[in-house]
Image 1 (cartoon, rainbow, N blue to C red):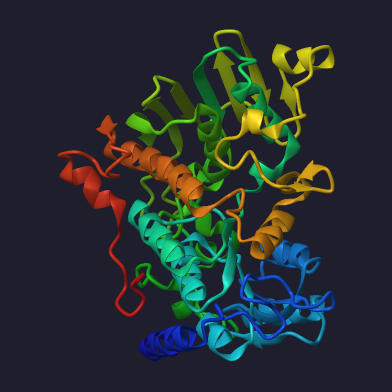
Image 2: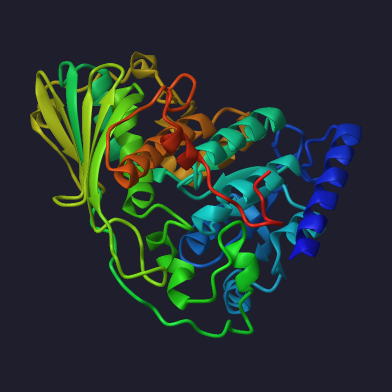
Amino acid sequence: MHNNQTTRRTFLQTAITAASIAGTGFHSAAAAQDGKPQSPNSRLRVGAIGLRYQGSVITEKAQRYGDIVALCDVDQHVREQARAAFGSTPRIYENYVDMLAGANLDVVLIGVPDHWHVQMAADALRAGKDVYVEKPLSLTIDEGKFLRSVVKDTNKVLQVGSWQRSDSRFRLAIELIRAGRLGKLTNVDVVLGKNKVGGPFEQFKVPKHFNWNLWKGQTPDYDYIPERAHYTFRWWYDYSGGQMTDWGAHHLDIAQWGINSLPVEINATAKYPTTGSDSYDVAIDFHTTYKYANDVVMTVSDSGRNGIMFTGTAGRIFVNRGTLTGKPVEALATNPLARSDWNDYAHDNLDRPLRNGKLDAIVNHMGNFFDCITTRHAPISDVESQHRSVTTCHLGNIAQRLGRTIKWDPQTETFPEDKEAIALMSREQRSGFEVK
């Protein structure tokens, strides 16, 4: 796979040089430099990487706004099924590097496992593409810091698939908090659900249709076990972070949006399986407590009703994907929020531009992304907010693995005088697949 990585470096060097000469931001002839099509009949060209599960979902949603012209997946069966689903027109690729080099794209969608998010997003951004990347944003804290710098350097639009920010229930919860309907926020309690338990699993010969080496990327060079790949990758720390980053990238994002601060101290307890390296290795049971700079306390548990409880001095509300309840919600019937001026609630992208009389993000998450390609505004799940949210998820996993209290400096983004915790901000990366 060293040849693949050489191709990636060569491609990026050529792309960056061309961008500096042409100054067009790599948009195709059908799109202007600001991302807006040059004519009403012009549509942005979209390439998708990772077409199984959520990858196929976001690609289908993007069809409303652009033309799907390229599809990439390391599993031949998946990419051929995707081409059948999205018509015969898109070209298919095994290696995303070849897609970036060979397809004329404006937009790249990334729906792959977590350990590939940052490198693929960085390569696409540096190739001049606007990017929609699935959550969680990063595999490690240091990866998130790196991608944030790439977004800043390239000045491209990056939307993270933390779509609960675009859901009316979660947004209304945040508006209630901002409007003071809960009084002073004091506590937030989050329930994510249990991690899966399983194994030891049997090793198999790699299927001919599946590029296992490319799928592994930066992660350790383990022999092929089907449970390591596709959907169940999330129960291995090599590729993900269990529920702390899976559901946590959604619920902790909303919780922290409401808290409107950053954590400074984390304490956690967790139990881990003892069945060996061929088994799921995320925590069997976990409980984490965060203290924030503004004195709010947040707990994160794996047991209870999935969702987020916000508690303040004047009331509390509970929100999840099916519910928004509590007396402050009931009070809206007689005392609605004033919506004549959205700037009353302006903070952290709550004040998005209006679209047909509604906040654009409420239309849908993918629509917000494509709106921002046109306007060049920051999307609702921008790189800074999502890096900070998934950092909080990573902090929980680090505290759980260390089994003790850790101190976090959100300004310098490090653990003061804690070498053991600092070592867990990054991971060793397989030669030829280093994130850079």
